[in-house]
Length: 296
Image 1 (tube, helix red, strand yellow):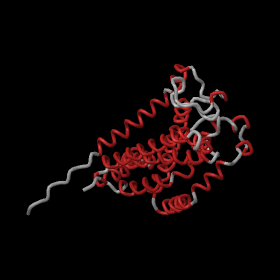
Image 2: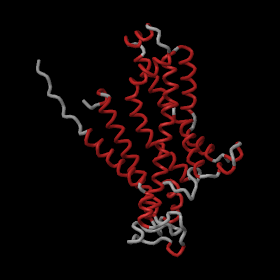
Image 3: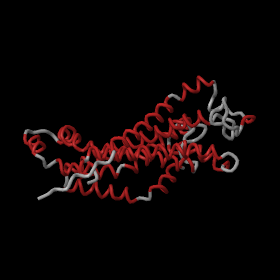
Image 4: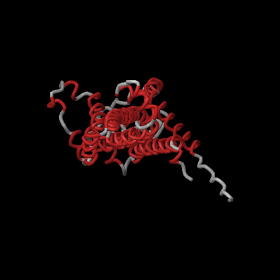
């Protein structure tokens, strides 16, 4: 019987490498923002109304914003915040989801049923309205120190915590499904037979085997969190000025689209490129780590 020749594989590696390169370049540039600030002698938070809405020049490579602040430096500092929120939020949600998924998948029975029904309830909640309501809560009235409640760190931590609280169900379902499959394998049963405890089995035998799909899901979640942060900051409920983020830079520029479109286009383009690169990297990881996900 004659077999059909295999189809040529898609250039997954090259696309994934290109996406990773874009993310690395953006990350390095954002991390180096203080260095560019020192070399240029400019302060990204310094207001200069006499220099507002300037066009790109040798002094200001991407011009200035509505308050005369250097746009290029604020984009780099805003990238530090947006990327940090995206990575920290996705990581926190992945950790919480992994804990729930491992416990539910390993113990099964009523533990699994209870945790999964709770997971379904969280997943069914209207995410964006809840995020808006929680982001509008006054932290100083929630018992936190007033000085910290209005600090820049508080606005970043608030977004990360909110994303973690409502972003873990996807990771929990993924980890639970993989755990249900792995726990029936012979080496797991052998570990149970020699008296290994549940914690040791979950950490040593189950977690390494669910790491690959979790890595893919976590990578894709970074782009999702960056978009959520951008939406909340655009609505004025996310990262609070003067700390820049790509989202609140869009918010500040929405009334200047006609007179200074570059101020809105640049942060929007960076959000688009970053999310696209993260999603492309996640797809490449999935096709690399999961042979069944590769196109036939």
